Amino acid sequence: MFENLTDRLSQTIKQIRGQARLTEDNIQDTLREVRKALLEADVALPVVRAFVDKVKERALGEDVIKSLTPGQALIKIVQAELVQLMGEANEELALNVRPPAVVLMAGLQGSGKTTTVAKLSRWLIEKKKKSVMVVSADVYRPAAIDQLKTLAQQVGANFFPSDPSQDPVAIANNAIDAARKQAQDVLIIDTAGRLHIDTEMMVEIKRLHGAVNPAETLFVVDSMTGQDAANTAKVFNDALPLTGVILTKTDGDARGGAALSIRHITGKPIKFLGVGEKTTALEPFHPDRMASRILGMGDVLSLIEEMEQKVDRGEAERLAKKVSKGKGFDLEDFRSQLQQMQKIGGIASLVEKMPGMSGMTQAVKNQMDDKQFKRLEAMINSMTPRERRFPKVINGSRKKRIATGSGTQVQDVNRLLKQFDQMQKMMKKFSKGGMKKMMRAMKGRMPPGAPF
Image 1 (cartoon, rainbow, N blue to C red):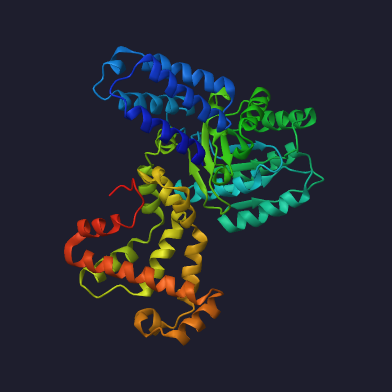
Image 2: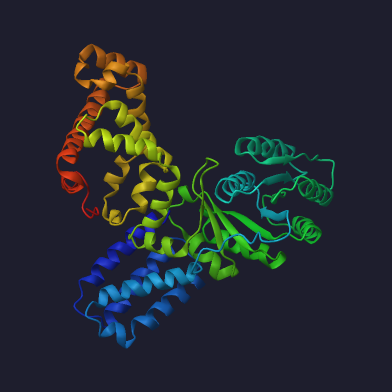
């Protein structure tokens, strides 16, 4: 998300950093580039105008013009205004009501609403330790009820059955009664979506909202529709008292216009981002962290949180002890590291959150494809335990067998062994001279701008 905008803004920021002092002319030139970058990211025009005007007003202030590092001062202003634009801080779900706290999910058909119900359920169960019940009030698409039932089983949520012959309000009220009797903390109601906004849909969801009086009314919208997502959210917000927005499919959105437009147009906060297809792929939205990411400064806090939650600490400690004792690093260990990497969203997610990585060329980014990691793992899985522990025994005939077993070519196996050999050498340096030596060894293999 924001790849195109980050690339454009990074180029603009480099130019302004090179200026000895800021003048009205070079500020004007910089803001013209910022304006173009935002419009290309499909940010709504009124939002772009308001943002550029605010940055210009602050940039022409005495503190910036007279600053010893005027370029850095301007970057801080752009970052602060991006945070302001997206909502300043993460706004958590307001679930401190008498149980069950009802969460009403609204949105157009195809926005990923039902899947998002499952993701939100899982997040509440795992991160907030809540008991969650889900129900489908979509009586127009029978498959929606079955889909939600399947997803509820996957994420460990309680499913309340419904039927297309029932009235949506009756379904919701029955589910609330059941959730209360079963002492559920949260009840999430999945509502019917449409292919477009229509009067009938709005009347029904208003009636449903009035009947259940939800603690949260969340609008689920596809980020890839850009500023249309913000406009659709506004129409819903005019009809319903929305409390927040969940942006879906952000992993496929290189522009990010919706994230930058929604708060300004609707006045409602983005509360979560859908960042993939898996039920674990839901992240709370932090405007300050997102602003840093947009400006190519990374998002270290989110990276640390992810690693703490998803990385197997016992496995990491085992490997650290093994390497520090000089016992060597084998292909079993290499496979374990690949699996840990995939747990935190893969190399693309890691690189996106690391500071200094925005300077990488697109060619380097393309090489960091998670499919390659899966191929590496498939090749290691095709080896015998002895081959994984002692890679030196892998000769020509063994390479052919490994390639056939993993659906790859012999040259792919050669490439894997070469990469492993390089990592093994790094691990030896780590065991002899600590982290600093390993970082210096890595630097030569990292793209310009890497944070070592």
